[in-house]
Amino acid sequence: MYFDTNKFDLTSQEIKRLQVWMNHNSNSKILSMEGFTDEVGSISYNDTLSLKRVAYIYNQVHNKLAVRADFKSNGFGELQQISDNKSENRRVTIYYLSEFQIELEEFIINDFKVQKSLDSLSIKAVDRLNIHPKLALNEIVQKVPEGTLFTLEDIQFHFDSAVLMLNAKEELNKWFVVLNNNPNLKIIVQGHICCIPKDDILLSSKRAKAVMDYLVSKGVEKERIKYIGYGANRPIYRIPEKNGYEALMNRRVEIVIQEK
Image 1 (cartoon, rainbow, N blue to C red):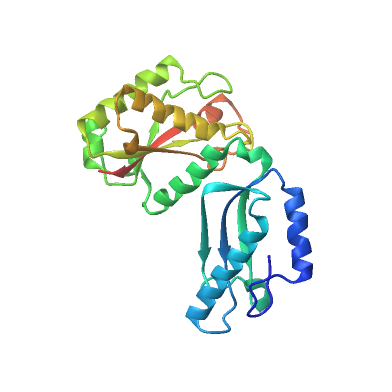
Image 2: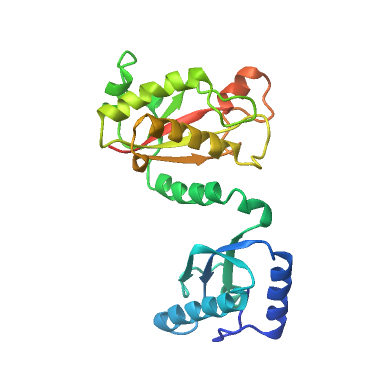
């Protein structure tokens, strides 16, 4: 939504736009709002103005649309200029889940938060490090730095589901031993899918969570494991794959060392 100079209430035209959006999203859920200004005025003035704009929009939608319990509002003032046109910088951005997405709310919010943790790491695959190939997994984990990525072999699921197959549990038992032997170790499980260009049901997130849940069921503290799904956004081989091997390589689970 856009605002006039130095104003924190909407014009009649923008109020109509907001009402149309609300009518089209009556079953959506609002997650957060961010307010912005142009560079006219002092920094402190613009910081306050951006928050007033958010408060105004919130009051318009409150009790009319669902709002997430941990709703957050932020005022960024003039810090994030997206256009040379000042009118495009005087805005409030609403982040929300559509009616379809609400069913997947847990995974969408989780993936957003975990990605922020990953952004702070320098990710590097373990096979690109100078590690002796005959070392046991526990020894490798102790030697590598934070941000090291392991691609797990034989982590398979029942067709089109997040149910782990028996061989997958045997592979994960190795990581349970590593986590048990290194009580300060924290990891992030990354899930990927193959074959289709879009993960509409967040199957990759559900599978990554299934890996986390299995390790937790073995006795690992939940606080030491995070999960995230990337869908088909990071394939090793181009989708659609040429053969079963390429599909298998794309349909993978990875573990990133977050903290040691």
